[in-house]
Length: 191
Image 1 (cartoon, one colour):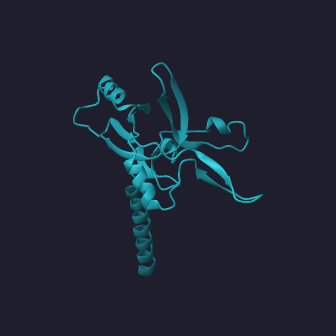
Image 2 (cartoon, one colour; image 1 turned 45 degrees about the vertical axis):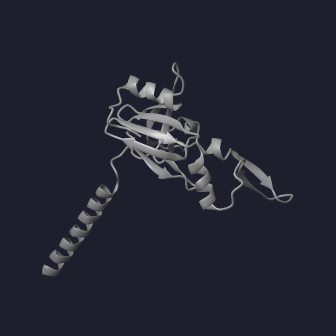
Image 3 (cartoon, helix red, strand yellow; image 1 turned 90 degrees about the vertical axis):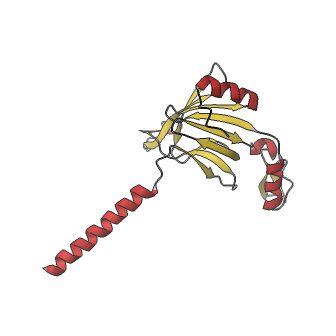
């Protein structure tokens, strides 16, 4: 009998540790800076507040609800583009050079990879095989690629309203300063 009680206590302890590890190890943040498949950093949605079938999957009978969030992209002054982002998907493409945040806002300094290194193009090296390479990427090693990225003076600026899921940008630095004042971003939150 004591052996059964001991096994139950051990299993209960293991179960509680697994629950605590799982709940404590996952960040509570909504938006995070994370590496993309090329090794550059992007802003991703980590914790969504909604479950629904993404609109692009609604036409399939076997589509199931995904956890995510509706993001409100303020592309121009007069237009808002609402899009359902699934958890773990990109909100702002790489490379996120710098960012700061508080409970209300996230400010982002982006060095846009598509502008600096170009978009992907297919390079054929025989009749049937090809690879994808960025149009302006002529560097063969990572250290030189990072040096080119750091030397670039191309910056886009973004503001994310964390509580409202509003994404504003991309901006020039001057337009970013105007928008942060308009949105009431506190002066102590600086890039």
